[in-house]
Image (cartoon, rainbow, N blue to C red; front, side, top):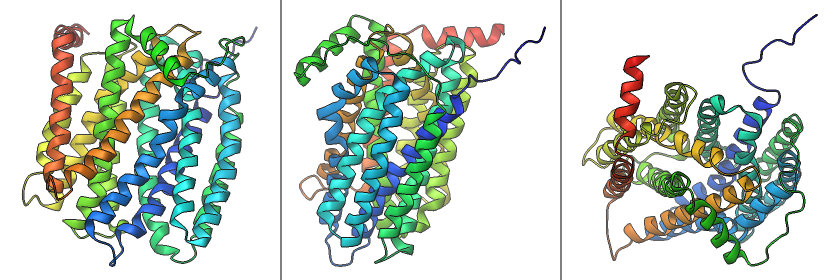
Length: 420
């Protein structure tokens, strides 16, 4: 009698991971492929450049604000695997449209393509996060989320760099950039087919056309669970800080360090290495449980890094070190939060809850884009370094809230480590 070998990770797990990585990479490559040429323009004012970067981020966020409940409903009504495969098919069409927009060099159509990718991600996110607890045992959920967040943020960083590289390398031949991204979407479609098959959580679920009412209803579901409710707002704060850092980093590197998009690779590498290390460490330290005590530690590191990044006259090596520290803290902060958001909802409401979480995440992202534009405007006049301090302050407040709401989490975590 033969037994099936014990697998470290369930069948289809790595297909899900690569599909998510490809989506994060392509989202950001397209966005920055459009943004970087504007930032490099010698005819536009700095205020106009800041405004365009913020508008592009806002247009990507708008679909999440409008359609996140649709994505949540789809994730419950249909198999999450089927939803992800359908989204990948749509992505190929969106990237072909983007190639057309890039060929025409039409900023309006390029921004429309960014908005369509926002719609794509709106449908993908609830299915992606909702399927994790369906394919992973509870004791592997934190480690799995560590890998997911690692690959997501590496995809974001590498996509940002790739967008800049393609923008500089294929000047006036941008159509090829769009075709490359369409081909990558095809690869993502093939890997998505290998994701583990799961049944629909609630095949009879009715669609609620009242978007505001649906969000409110899902919020009430989360509010009934104190841990779920708090994790939701921690997730929103994280995406606010992450987006503000991402926009501000590109502007800081270009304005203060006078770097071209392709010369920012070492900054992006420092941040991605930090995020990767933080996510993996969080997964390891969790040791088969959701470790709430890691959240204030991550918040403290992010706050310190925010102050460090904005220090007047900071050198490039020290700036890179601060970025790595920020990424490390971000990984420790977000992995336990994502695990709570996946584990706590019932099987029938996971998709709906993830839709509401996604909606609030993009409230944070849209708020960050508007905040960047406001803080760097002439009326407020903060420097890019001082905006990093705002990121640190928000991180600090998030950590203080966790300590206040769960005062025993950190000491209990340390006690467990001592006894193991």
